Structure formats: structure tokens, C-alpha cells
Length: 155
Image 1 (spheres, helix red, strand yellow):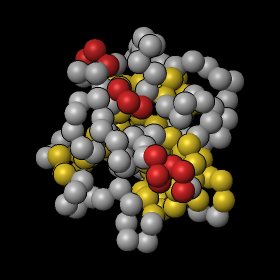
Image 2 (cartoon, one colour; image 1 turned 180 degrees about the vertical axis):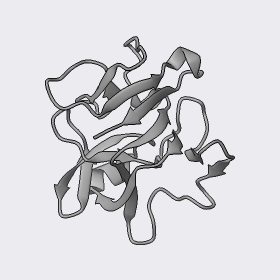
Image 3 (spheres, helix red, strand yellow; image 1 turned 45 degrees about the horizontal axis):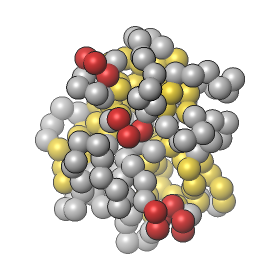
Image 4 (cartoon, one colour; image 1 turned 90 degrees about the horizontal axis):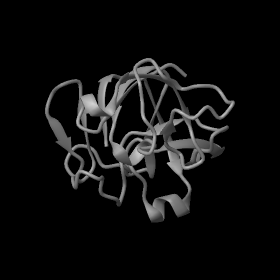
């Protein structure tokens, strides 16, 4: 699940069949593997993250929703299906300010303000430097935000 405070660019793409079958978490990082087709990211290849989850439940037990700004949470089953009628998903790229829940960042690490973040081989955020480009900075540490990692994306 992702909370949006300042949105980056929204792109449309299709996910590969195995990912569509197995599902993903909202906030899961992806990479391009074909013409407008995406699969899970690696630490060296990523294009953005999937805004809405599909077929999985988050650690808070809610179906996948997102919050735009500080307004109400919008249930995915009404306005925001993860996959549209054309089989496309929404990918967030570019800058922005987001909170990510515990499914999509490395919870075994301790985070500090202004710490540089990377994508790991599990397609989630981490503060472990992989030697690749960073994707952003921590602006809210999980203990300040009930387990949510606040990130200012800059990629």
C-alpha cells in the first residue's frame, strides 16, 4: 500500500503473465522487459513502482488502496482496480513524496532521516548501497509513522 503526498509521473504498462498470476504489493518496484511490459525490478534495473497491489493483502490486513494527499483512502474495488480493462497497470516514475508500508521496504534495516535509498533484488526499498544509483531519500522514518517509510523520490 502506498500513500501519495506529491505525485510523480504516472505511466501505463502491462505486467508479465507470471506476475499477473502471482500478484504483487502496492509499491513493488518493476523494470521494463519488453515493449511497455514490466517484471519485478532488480537492484540494477528499475523503472518505477506499481501504485496498486493485485491479488495480495498488505501487512495491515487491508485490500489495496491508496491515499492521495491527506484525504480519504479510496477502496480499490470501486475506483481503482490494479489492472484496467486493457490489461495495463499504473507505474509511478519521476519524483514525488510517498509513504510505503512494510511489504515494500526492507524491515530488517534501521532508517534515518535523509538516508539514501536503493532498490534491492527483492524489488523493495532498502538503505543498503548496491553500488547503483539511489532512488531517493528518507523523509519519515518508520517509527515516526506507524511502520510507514516516507520517501522523497528523485530518480
